[in-house]
Image (cartoon, rainbow, N blue to C red; front, side, top):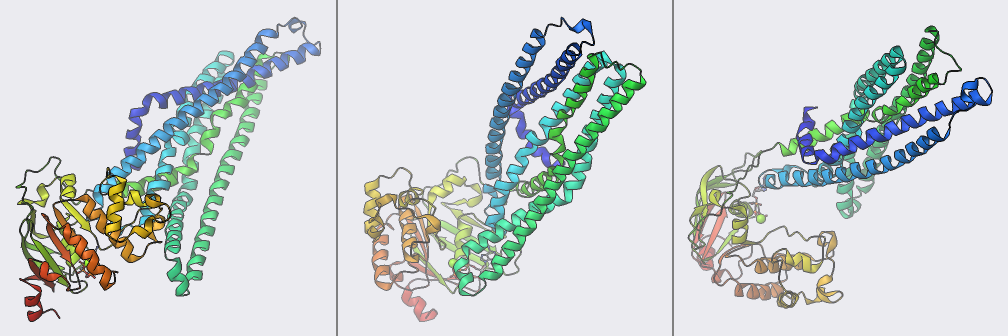
Length: 567
Ligand code: ATP
Ligand code: MG
């Protein structure tokens, strides 16, 4: 239960609407109970007078109770509608806040951490688990509070007619309110927990299957993966079936208890020798006892879900209780305005890995210098850049930009200082325009058209221009096209430091030359780091660095590098 506490705190802000929801639910259920009770009473009176069994009721004025019955049924309908509107509205508001709350918590955790969580798992936590937590109010809090107040009011009302019956019914209802949640929470706990796990597993493997469909088909493994999905789906259906059974049992047992309670009440009345079938007052007792079980119906179907909700809350807590590994300053840092870069005695290895990727790295790049870093695959080039973006923190050593250690930078200030073409380009499921505007939100269309032309991407505009949809993570684009879109983004971002991780990978030699020429035009007045496997154009660089076995060595030019080492 403690797992739910962080979410209950979010409820504070909406206490007024949440209380309104409870009040309206109480009014609705009271109207419903009163309606059955009053109708039963009026029917009994009309039966008695119709049969001529009592003269006292032959002149009974039906108009007032009939009008009250009308009023109650209207009240019940309006009450239910208003209650549903208010509670659903506030629940959706809470859902939005919960998602934003979760998102705010996870985004600072991504650098240096969440790489070990799979996308589908995160998505599941953000969607299904958060929705399960969102049900706490409607399924649990609201019915329990309405139940407690409703039972108290009803018992006091019956107490006025018959003290014993008031006490008996009040005690039975309160006991049920206590016992039902305990029984059904415990019954549904294991199944609810497994259901939440199953749902997560199904999402993860289905997404894997969808994303890797071509590879799986080519390697003949598609059927095996599909069968795992079907098996998990079957398992999930079984858990849902069990859950539906618990709902049925809880509901059926409640109806049975209601019948037995009614028998007990009739038996008590007979034993008190008070029951005069000609006295319609006893129909009030009987009918309100029957209707009183309406107070427990929402509770009967709720508690076997609690296990699922707690598992979901635990899964979300696992993430949000984590502290960000990388911290930034809240205020802007004051720096020299000269965008030099310095690595001083930097050592780095990834968490959960014994491999020391970088060893004693010392690197000085002056403001507006252009350098290249080369090295074999897996030698740590991209890792070096990730350290510069403050995505990881080195175990030893200091990295500075503009003579300020990274730890003293504000995050948005740092992001504005560096433009990147990363090795793994991500294309958003959006239009070409939106994909470019993430780098410069206010850029005008004609400038976008010009730069697309500059990088030989005008053919992408043929159909719908900048509105061309690049959905599906850019599946419809070639590797070289994606890379050029990222190059354009880095140019539009226009930061004083430009970092290019294999910017021309996937391009043929001719296009590569042309793209590099265009790109070099934007090097002016910037500090540039370019990572490459190919040695073309390195002569234009002020220095070339080689990373080998975790160490970095400086060469003054391509020819001196070739003479010494890299061939
Ligand atoms: P390439 O030229 O192929 O891009 P690279 O020089 O950029 O290679 P890095 O990506 O920096 O190489 O990787 C350096 C080493 O760190 C590799 O051995 C790689 O397996 C390891 N590595 C990279 N990312 C992680 C990570 N997130 N967790 C653990 N190890 C990692
Ligand atoms: Mg790399």
